[in-house]
Length: 188
Image 1 (cartoon, rainbow, N blue to C red):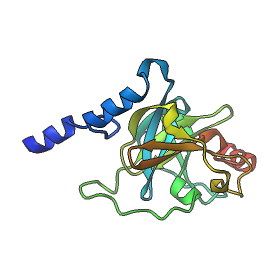
Image 2 (tube, one colour):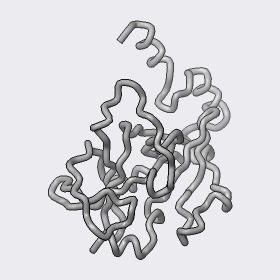
Image 3 (tube, helix red, strand yellow):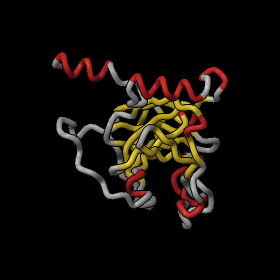
């Protein structure tokens, strides 16, 4: 890595803010008194999405996926992850998001799976780039407007919109992404 690039990386925080921007945020409210939310951030299409870290069991390189008949179109199949057979879901297909071309230098044959554990099931969510960790004050997360919700899904799965500088991150509640019927299909 060239020296200039290394300096540029050092000058940014984990949220992409410069040290000056970080100090501005610290002046607004004392960090110790504000509740924080820890998120796992990933890209779907051109947009950034996030899941609360407590909903993610692990992140791993996606193993071989075996296609299964009679599953929803967005379920790629099942995979053996550390001895557990779990369904692997593609959220770009689930949400009808047009995939973006991969950034130069990324191997299109390597994807990552976020293993999520709900009360009644485990599922893997495949993403194309390495997910990032982000700690964010809860005051930076706004409730999602009701018109953004998917009318085909009975629950509101968009938990909020996180604001970081001029960037928005859509925060998902993974426990509400699937309908009860879809959970039965995947668990069977």
